[in-house]
Image (tube, rainbow, N blue to C red; front, side, top):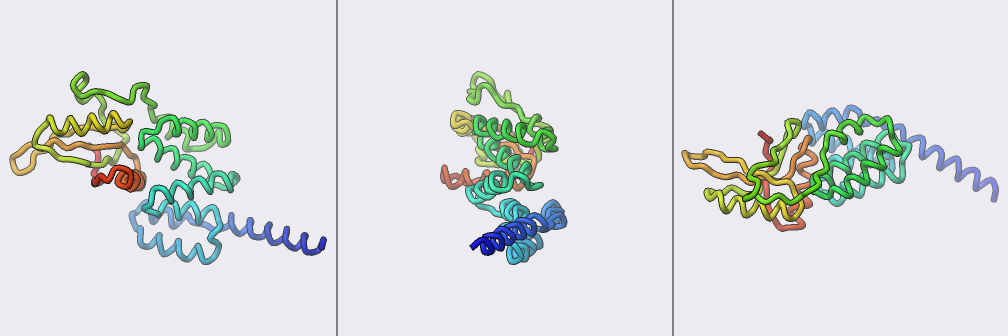
Length: 229
């Protein structure tokens, strides 16, 4: 009986070692270069080697287009593999997701957790750039266009285009009252001015895709990712 237990412990130890040993550095570079199809092929190969590796789970989360599934995977990495080199990155991804959704309390909780567990994490600087608003609801009529997208924001999501500024403001107010960041930008198309309504502000396109997936499922609202100006 003791021999079986020893063998089982050795098996678990070896499994943990190999779970940590998969190198996804080159695949992460492919994602940055927008070579998504190649990265997905790598993921399939890695899963055959060890699907329970924190590196593989983190990579799976990065590549999935389902926001809910991605969050579960990030949470799995940070809670089950807290010693993994990807644990703080997973927490940062979760933070970015909830912040973009306007769920600032949840985002703040994750920030505190990362500060406590990984005080030397490089992601803390990125977190500290984000400002937690004290008042999430701003009426357009009393303070039009007060909030502007930060300079480090690269992407946002277009959810409407109106010839009427009044209609654009109505949608913007609905989004603000729901707790989301929203903005209006004028755009001239075929000599006509359209008022483009956007939601969210993202530093990475993958974050915008994740948010859009959840937003569409929750509100049955379509949208498209555009570059922030």
